Figure 1 (tube, rainbow, N blue to C red):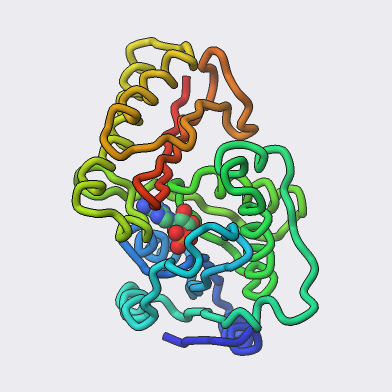
Figure 2 (cartoon, rainbow, N blue to C red):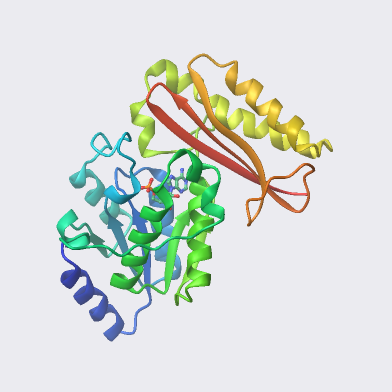
Length: 281
Ligand code: AMP
């Protein structure tokens, strides 16, 4: 497995792959790998000849009061895990390589970024779409792999690729969960034992939502209240948002119709966790 720290190095690697007639898959990550990341890498490996994993904690997508400085980092562990699943190259650039002095160009998706995490984290998606555009330009992958765990991010990237005619396929893969249902996240390590135990309410509230929809409930307000009540009555859980919106335009709904997403962000102390589920009515 090649470890590249500069854009020139990863471009060289990709050039060699292309010269050998290989297709290239890209898995963008911020590192501190768990089974969710590894699943994306394995799937990428199945459908592409060469897999590049980018490992970059993008400062541009963190707000001034967010956890950029504390975000968990362990390059050696990540590199070993990526090698184990057959990743061909890791691109882990320093900040100066991605944002050299004078950098002043941004990519912004409007509309759907004005809801959910876009409201709680102003500027977050502008940071995401800017860095992902840069990664796409640097690696020029045939396919890029993202997780449903970050549903809004996946939708925003799909929108960007479509609107800007980027020549690649975006693949979105299901959320990988712990045995008790908690969505895997690098941020789960921030949770205390008690918070970790209580955090299972997120998945339980999404299951309750799905079950109620299956029983025939279509009233978005009622479904939302059901989830909010479950979460709010859990010790230490502070709701940031619980929303039920249409897919893919993320418009508010009174009655569920077509594809709908129930998405939530909840704080346990300093730790903000997100999760979601999509239903087809
Ligand atoms: P991150 O390193 O958290 O930025 O995540 C990198 C990629 O892995 C993103 O496309 C995420 O959506 C995806 N991902 C993170 N957690 C999970 C999970 N539990 N299941 C599936 N994909 C995930």
